[in-house]
Length: 153
Image (cartoon, rainbow, N blue to C red; front, side, top):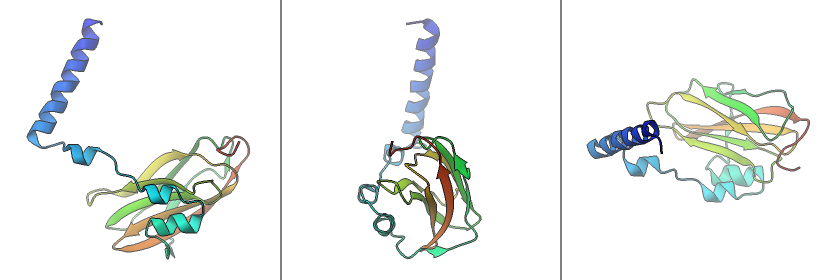
């Protein structure tokens, strides 16, 4: 092991220990919880219902930024943004994927309504973004054409 690598590792471990010790970083907040039931659903309606968004209202305040044509369905960059206040959750669904729920993000009160990620698409499909804010669910759709690859082969 090189001295420089050892020092970097020691410094990172020390900083993490100080953050945990002072209460700035709580292990329960770092561990990710995931909606296992929603991720295991096979249809869009069932996955949305499992996320508590079965009766989402269409909203023009939600903007989905994704390519119109994805040359490789294995890596499709998307971002979802909204000016709504009090955003609690942003979920991304791909209608024709074997498991429609692609991603779900729980946001805190201080976060802006924005997420950016890469998803996998099996074939040409609608991307549905669902924003839960103020105890209500809102949605928006965008069609993305997949030319090759994807999770379906």
